[in-house]
Each structure stands twice: as C-alpha cells, then as structure tokens.
Length: 421
Image (cartoon, rainbow, N blue to C red; front, side):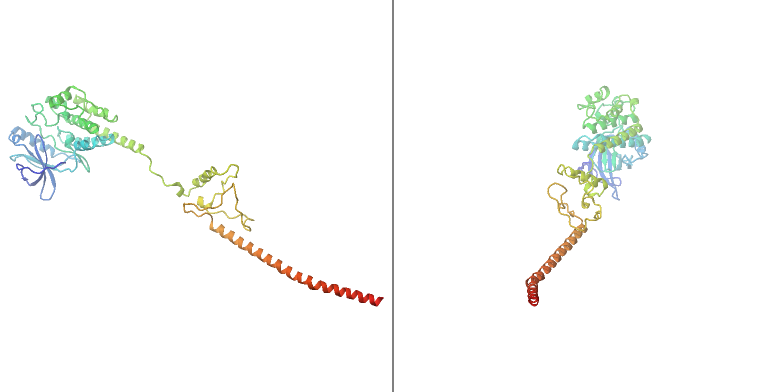
C-alpha cells in the first residue's frame, strides 16, 4: 500500500495511536498508518468533518462498528479500536502489509485462472464470516482487497451507508466505484449478502481481465450498464466464466450464496492447479548409466550390437564387467594356461580407456595373464638354454672322441692281421 507524508492539516495523534503516514483517502475520510505504545501498527480511519456533524450518520456508524466487532475470521482486517463519540469519529483496524489487488493487477497484468480462483475462494470464505456477523461490506472492490503474505484480506468495510455521502446517484447509497456496485445499490434498494456477491463477481472479472466487466465511462453510463446491460466477460477463463456470470445476475435471488461460491471456487482452484502441474515438463531424471540395474546391463549390449560389423557374433552375454557393474565370471578351464591373442578386424574390441573414468578390464584377469606370460617366457628361456648346453658337448666329442676310436680300431685290426698273417 502506497504511503504519503502527513499534511499540515492532518492530526499527529488520535486516541492512543500516533500517526506516521497517510495511506489514502475515500468518501468517508482519510486513512492513516498509526501505531500504539507497544508498536502494533494499525490502519486508522478518521471520518470527514461534514459526516461527523450528521447525527443519522453517527447512529448508523455506531451500529456498523458494533457489528464489525463480532466478525471472526482470518480473511478480514480485525477491528482494533474505535471512538464513536469523538468530534471526528474514527476506527482502527489491523494493518495488513501488501499491495491491493487493484495495484497488483495494474502493475503485473491479469492473474491466471488458478490464482483468481484461489483468491476468490479465500474472499468468499471471509464474506461468510462477515455475513454471519450481520454485516454487509457494501463496497467490495479490488482496491479494498489487500494481498498479504498470509492471503487476501478484506478492508474498509461498508460503514459508509450515509445519506448524501455519494456523488454517484445523489441519493442514499454506499460509497464505492460504479463498476462494482450491485443493481440494487444503484436503485437505492436494501442491501443483502447477495450485494457483496455481485461485487465479488465484478472483482474476479477484473482480476482475470484487468478491466471492469461493465467497461469505462462516466458514472451515469457505468451505472446504467450495471442495471440494464449484461457484463462483458471476454478474457475470463472458461473455468471461471459461468460462475462469474452467475454472481453478476441482475436479480439477487439468482446469485449463488457466499458458501456455495467458496466451495465451487476451491474446486476450480484445485483443478486448475493440477492442470498446471500436469502441463509442466517432467523434472530431469538421474542418468541411468549411474544406476547399476539389470535393465541397464541388458540394454547396453543391445546398443553395442548396432555398431558392430555385420556378420560378427553378437557380444550379448559377454559384456565387460566394468560396464555392467557385475563381478567378472571365473575363467573357464583350459584358458588360464595361455594368453589370449587380441583379435584384429571385426569382432569384439579389446579393452580400451574411455573418458568416463571406468577401468578397461578386470585387474585380476590382467594379473593372471601377466603371470602366465612370465611363466611361459621362463620355460622357453630354460628350454633354449638346455638345448644349447646339449649341443656344445656333442660337438667336442665329435671332434676328439670319434677320431681316437677310429685310429685305435684301425691299429687293432692291423695288429691282428699281422699276427694272423
């Protein structure tokens, strides 16, 4: 709510409240921001001097203040104090921080269907408590609805039923905006809770379209439209249009009650909110590669088969343990005694390092292969050494041993032959 500095003619203290700023002015008087000795802030309205001199107004004002004290509910600004006998009567209500519905829509544009329905449901519930206390607001409009952090609040109750206080029809009527007055108010007929229902319907139409359902123009033109023409609800969401139109019925008997209105608007707000949630994109899911599930283990080989060369055997069932997250199967018998040569060309690729930080193969299998390689290498080296050792002595015997045996055998035969001959 906009605040202005106090003017020279404004009082500084009213009752037990110290006044700090101006909050606004209306047909009844001026509203100030005040506080008591404990620091509690209030919205204090001081009645206009000309109305204060009207005894009929004072009597009606006293009845309305007495009824307002009985209002219970969280959707209204609670009455804190009042002085009906002062030279200028005044009353103070709880101060509600937050912009008015009029200012919010003027600054940010029309509200969505779900938000309009939620605001309307809260206001209808508040009006139920108001009407149960025997009070009719008589001046419900967007500027008299404050959007506090705890929800909408109705302020500035229609304690303004004053003869001659209106410049709209020049007859006894409630002070208010012509686009939000009910037809019975324009005609000067008695007001009922249905009067507030009409004003609430016009207020909801404004919240949804940023415009009055009866357009713009002079006061006389607007009042004529309220009484004789149908409201223009272009731009009102389809979910709300039938209910708003029912609230704006010319005959008060055809309008829904505040209780019916509250229940219906709650249903619409819940349905529209659910619809908004259903149309929102789903939240990003956690990467499935980080979830070691059986479904992922089966789907990954299927993706790899799409990249393999046609005609090669399917790698299904032989996927790397590091890809599936499962423990490696023990090697089959007969395969641990020799290293497996890597295949070239088509077929399953050998282990390779990727950018994901995963290990290319099982370290246990690598150690087994390394052990086999070392053992085979040692066996081959020992075999070569043994072969070289056997060939060396054989060549030495061929060089010395056999020659001596031949010479000895020849000498033996010569000696025998000599003896025999």
